[in-house]
Image (cartoon, rainbow, N blue to C red; front, side):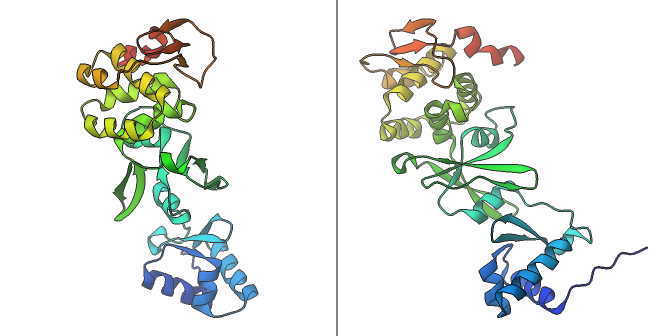
Length: 270
């Protein structure tokens, strides 16, 4: 038996206008402007569309239009990257999520992490959580535009992804996961660009962690020489884990709270 879901004239008009404009995401105000009706009437139209699975609320006052291909039951989902692009302007998908996107890790993040310079409350799309992480404006750079489903979204480029993993290991699975990312991306990284970013970032602890990891991985000797400095004092190798000193690296000015075996444990599965 065929199940028919009829749309009222206002519901049809809203969908028609949105599809004509190529808009997949719309706000309450967008719907009001297109239909030119009262707030209560707009609320009723949106509520009826939600009940008929023709739209989904992705954050308060913002909705995603389900396309005709979703069928009667509305079983369809948009790429999480495009959802992010629809709800924020200045952002990049970053941290562990960017490592996953660039195939630097086999670990699948349980949420999509997004870097912003202004605070924003986390949201959910279906059963997927989008976590917004605030960083300072001077650290907001190294953004690449990538395409998915004929649209674009923003993600940290490979070089910035590596440096973010060394800057914010708590958002990237720890320094061992950062070391794995460096190893997996070693042939794809633009090392000159990474050094330019490193200088711009100007964080001593990140420079030390990068040099130490390259040493342990025994790669990129010429990059190690450029990274090396006369470091003053010591920094933690992995600030995201227990600060229990196991050893020192005098070459890189680091307090080692992660042993080499733990740092390279992922290699056993290669």
